[in-house]
Image 1 (tube, rainbow, N blue to C red):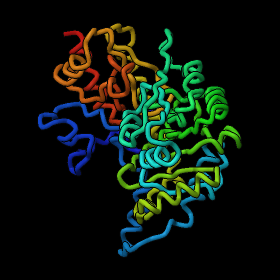
Image 2: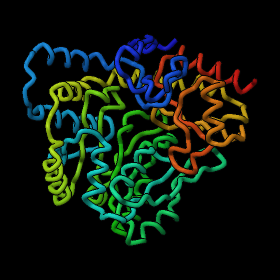
Image 3: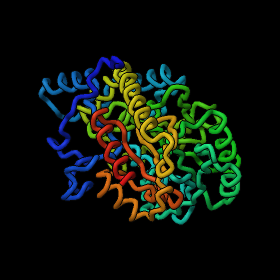
Image 4: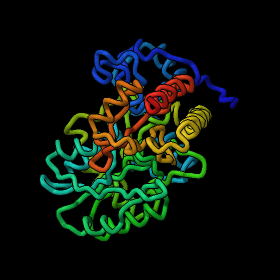
Length: 393
């Protein structure tokens, strides 16, 4: 058995705190016996250096207003340089409460009501909510699922949509939630060239950047070159990488000076520019010292993926869309011939799975489901037993 150096097999009762993943508002009042695999966080304790840093900050005992910690932005920049070869300028970094906040502000600042924002479904459902709630139009350029089970961008479709002057922005998801693609450099370059040529601003949600599997490496969109950096906004956070979503914030990287000034002014107007003492401590510790834990966690998740792959191999009723990154699996249940409600009911009542229905990610997600495998091996194995039994019944 692999020596992970960290105890990812520890079963921790998430119900001891009001964790959304197992909360009745997500699972329903009768959901105690379900495999909770819908919300995108991990069932693993945060890295020891993060816990130690938060404990030190707690012992200080004073929690008045704080500035950004001096070491935080350099720690972020050093992390991305070391792990991903991206030399970002710390002067381009702004703080934000979360990545979705940055997407919403970008939409409201750099598009007008009624204008289009291009998305590539199946894609994270909150993209659609942000666009709708800001009175913009979601313009869909669906990903193409090839016969090899791999999703690709539809560049011909993107060219047509980007050429429409009513479409002023594109939300990029990399690595892509939910299909697990880690977009390659040439794919990103082609997307960037199309968007630059037609004046479409790229807003990149790169929150899953650090979670990639062997043979695949993350490329930050803004690292492609100066032209793409100036035509993009990068949204980053350690929330997924280190499982600290409830005690961290995020970062918005904007190379263009005018857009950065506008974004900073909007942050001030909305008063979302305050700092949290525990977030400061957690994030700096994660970027400084969390690397070994992250490497071990990704290895554990990769072994969980292997378990799923082995258990579903050869089946026609459910197929694994092979992921290149993230801890979220995209499973194809279209072989069951069920509609959206039928699939949800089957998974919940027969397999005892609480997952995210594919249709939530766009029309071309119907018949699929997103499943979080960042859980203990024992829990995942038991869930797979129930699924296989339900499929065989």
